Amino acid sequence: MEDHDTGAGASAVGMSGASPTQSAGPHTARFSRHAGAHQRHASQRQIGLSQADQHGDQPKGKTRKRRKRKRGRKVFARDENGAVPHAAPAATAASQPRSGPSPFDPKLAAPQRPPQQELPVFAALDLGTNNCRLLVAVPGRHGQFRVIDAFSRIVRLGEGLTASGRLGQAAMDRAVEALKICGEKLRNRKIRKARLIATEACRSAANGVEFLDRVEREAGLKLEIIDRQTEARLAVSGCGSLVERDTQGVVLFDIGGGSSEIALIDLTGRRSPRLANHIVSWTSLPVGVVSLAERFGGRTVTRETFAAMVDDVAARLKAFDGRDRLAHVLASPNFHLLGTSGTVTTLAGVHLDLDRYDRRRVDGLWMDRDSVDRMIERLIGWDFQQRCANPCIGADRADLVLAGCAILEAIRGVWPSERLRVADRGLREGILSELMADDGVWRNNGGRRA
Image 1 (cartoon, rainbow, N blue to C red):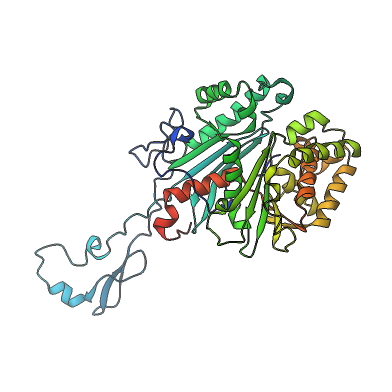
Image 2 (image 1 turned 90 degrees about the vertical axis):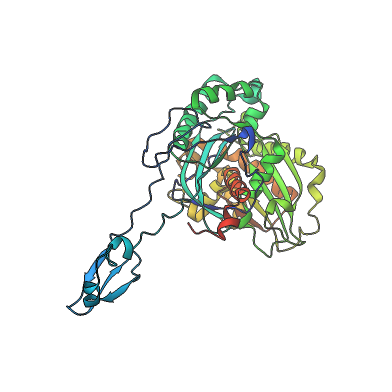
């Protein structure tokens, strides 16, 4: 499902870190700075080799002002902050011998403040089974960051993968075109660190590595295929701020296009700043909205078909050995589910009856058990055209949303909860949080405010 990016105005929060401070290995795009900070041209070389600095210029301070009062009174110069660095009676100043520059020379009286230090820029790219997503951000307050650019496009890279075991030509073409746009966005900024990942489609396809070689040649991006455990951890890292202090346990799930990651988080002990440190069990189901819809059908979904999808996922969850690791907190009012996928954001948008998807209203929204039941029942009752017509679903997701609801129903069956929190964030936010934390931007600046 698409994550409904709102663009450069969106903000995200994270608390985790797991990438080395130096160059982060083959999965991290490397960049070098041009000497001319005022030359704003994009490098034609591959991302990972060089790029132009579009943010090197600092805003010029206000022009220094000199002001005279009536004769015999003080003459003074103000610097750009309004402070008075030096003042003396005008008559005294005029009578001094001029063996050197006047003490009221503006260059001496109002020295310019050193240029403000640039905020470092970080980037995260996630190429999934259904979507290609990019976030570019700068650090903000401690543990937080501000998004300055974003991109999201449904590419359906995993289309037909379940049947053939290979990425299709048309699907790869769509993904490469989207990745070319991402490459241009990255080359137009001075990136301190970036991590570019590929998930289930490339992980399971027989030609996944071959496809990423093509991406490097044509889009200039070197992507890393991450394993399922890393994917689960990054999803958790991206949602730290949505887990409140009094929470005792959380089942966090990310329903993707080709796989679904589930992490059990126990917070009954001493709490670490990094939510991922509290994962006590996790699993990655090799089933997502694309693969499930392709096997059972997504356009026409009867109640019987929907029940069969739920049973399929429930059988996979039954084989998950660690599913009982939160049994001691399931009955607590301080236990809840936390969903980071397009399935739950779509449900939230339908629940709010939005005329247009609004991330600000969806991200962090609480839904109770009855509300989730009503929304799923409502969607099952709609035919394909009605799902297409809903502004929070649309034609791109109309054949996938019920498969996502079936996965959600199976999860709720294993871990029943009175509350579900919706997160319009995920892997990219987790990557950014980890890159920034390990780069020390929050530790070094004592809580920089962006």
